[in-house]
Image (cartoon, rainbow, N blue to C red; front, side, top):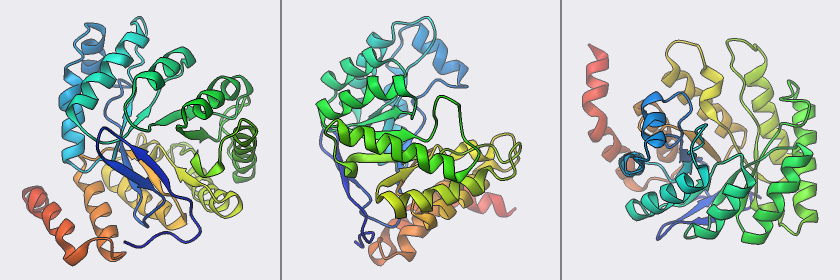
Length: 296
């Protein structure tokens, strides 16, 4: 397996599996599906306390190639602390991959870090002062990897320069709190291309500049870029490959999307990260019916 040149490697651990972010040219995929945003059925299940639904969500994502799972149970009106602890229990009983704890509530985050097994990631802090003050000390205390979004008190910057500046501020604050910058992952933020013609370009430039200037891993909520546009899976897969080319080492996406799976399998094949093409052939056989149907 071919390591990325001059890129720190972050080891995250689940109940059994260890995932190394930054170790390969093909980015690590963080499964996005345990998140109630824009998912009415999941919102209703969480409100009803039917947390067992998360077992199937977790298993399906891992079966389809997720290296890490993002866990977000933030629904207005529920006891998020209880929901998060139940989610961690159920998911970690079902799958062995590492987790990213995704919550806007520092109290929920603190309880989750106490309960989670292995070494997780935190998704996330921003460059907002209050958010950094609440989240960074927890990341340092529990030795968790920290995702930092290039957003500050003024909102989401449209320029690369401002995003890079915010990334530097997050890294500086984390190092002052005792964190090693190798455990920081900068989210370079994707904007909808349908409403911001330079949004994707700013993201690509930010990935490259942050990687070169600060020497840290980078990530992205990838599907934001295609919001509101047709053929979103194809756009997401193409954008993932472009971001990886600029240095992105992990991303939040849907592992059950065959277009994304194809792009990831092809990347591993061409970078020599798939011995004798066994991974690609396994993937293709699994989804062959879908691809054959698309030809008709």
